[in-house]
Amino acid sequence: MPDSIQDFEKAISELQARIEELKQLTRDEGEDRAVEIETLETRVRGLIERAYSQLSPWDKTQVARNPLRPYTLNYIQLMTEEFIELHGDRHFGDDPAMVGGLARLDGQWVVILGHQKGRDLAERRRRNFGSARPEGYRKAMRLMRLAEKFGHPVICLVDTPAADCSVGAEERGISAAIAQNMHDMFQLSVPVIVVVIGEGGSGGAIGIGVGDRVLMLEHAVYSVIPPEGCAAIIWRDAKLATSAAAALRLTAEDAWGFGVVDEIIPEPLGGAHRDYDASARAVKAALLRHLAEVQALSEAERMEARYQHFRRIGEFAEPARGDAPPSNGAGQAARPKRVSDAG
Image (cartoon, rainbow, N blue to C red):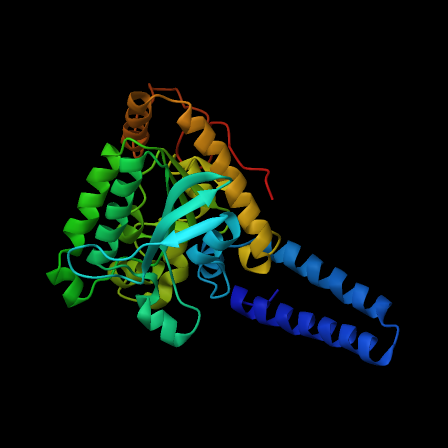
């Protein structure tokens, strides 16, 4: 396997290009290249299976950042039957890094919102690389209040390296906007489901990350700080990001083990960027299942369970001398693992 997941993806792309070339020759010239094509396809699948079964935390970070990975608007398009995007925070302006609006999910009206990165350089700059500004978080809360007014569930899709940290964002109160969202999301009377679909970075993630259920895609990451920033602070060397990624325990398995997320949603073989449709089907199935479970609770039960879910994060209970609770390898007592079999 190549030294990095980026090198591996490049090698796989070259093999897949060769497969497409052979298929084109078959169509254009009638040559029978079926055996060669099948051999290459089997090789590609085997390489992907092997590589993605042994990803390091840093590799997972790179997969979560893959520029071909489906973003919030892709999931909205593939999961919902209708979507009406809404804009603006009614205080300052509109933030393209945070998108959202009303949508029909399996016939049910919901408010769905999330971070949006860009595909090309122009769009990335316009959307600030998915790092939302204060007006983005205020827009998100405006949409959540709209959902509460009409009794619609809220779905939040998290995918950001971090919140915007520019001077302008600080002047307009980015920290206060995130803190206000965290406070207000605990008070929402409607169901709230959160899905980390790519990067769950720092306060930028938690600003729309408080929910009755928090789900996470298999190759997504969730961390208090990006590995490069952690390495620069701790070791004064951003090049040690690989070590920082391991220390941060940022993978979906780690997040589940610590009780931060309720379920890991499996991705298609080789990551969500290889099959948008399959990934969207898996996310949609998990959303519908968790929505049904949460909607079965009374409003009071739902709000109390949401509060207790986050209160439990970071709990530490020292065992009696000589006793050791069964461990799942993440420093907590073992518990049943809820992994969706959808997709």
